Image 1 (tube, rainbow, N blue to C red):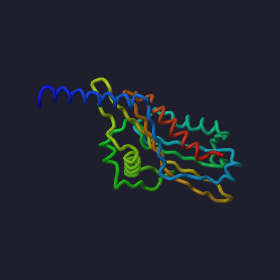
Image 2 (cartoon, rainbow, N blue to C red; image 1 turned 60 degrees about the vertical axis):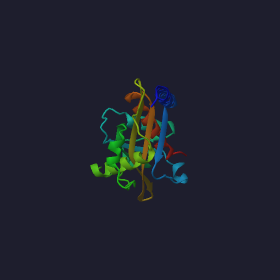
Image 3 (tube, rainbow, N blue to C red; image 1 turned 120 degrees about the vertical axis):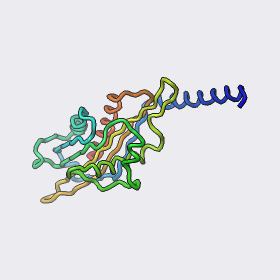
Image 4 (cartoon, rainbow, N blue to C red; image 1 turned 90 degrees about the vertical axis):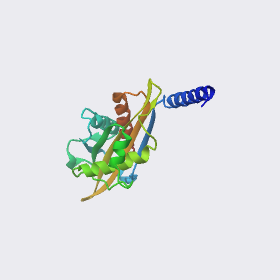
Length: 213
């Protein structure tokens, strides 16, 4: 390779990585719901109270997801009750994953690209958690995350996955809805605290939409 071609190649590569870094300089987020939930409108308009339980199975113990979710629902006009017996709806959310996205780890988690059925109120096994997280994030993120763009710029991707179970009281019985929700936050050199806060907001907003009247 001649000196001219080598210099040209280096310049083009430098421009490409710079443009990629600029492209990701603004925060980019994605949200995915595996199974849409449509609560009966005639019951939603009459509903007043919700019981909310959040279990954290992730490796990030300090997340404040439960309070953020409750505040979202309160802002929509619902009352949060500590008594599931008096609630119009029982909402159980299992936080399965909340951390830096590592493509290799997620690939190991995924199996056949299919999302397993919701495990809502039941105890989460490591097998359940791995299958759900791997399938959702594998479908959401089609490119290598955490890529280095130049010596000082790194594209960071954080992600969160929750399993959602909603119990709707219908006369003397209960109707159960289940789904999973995933969210990602990607930006050059984003810090973990900011990323997790944004992901929590996205997840809370999406779950809140299930109760939109």
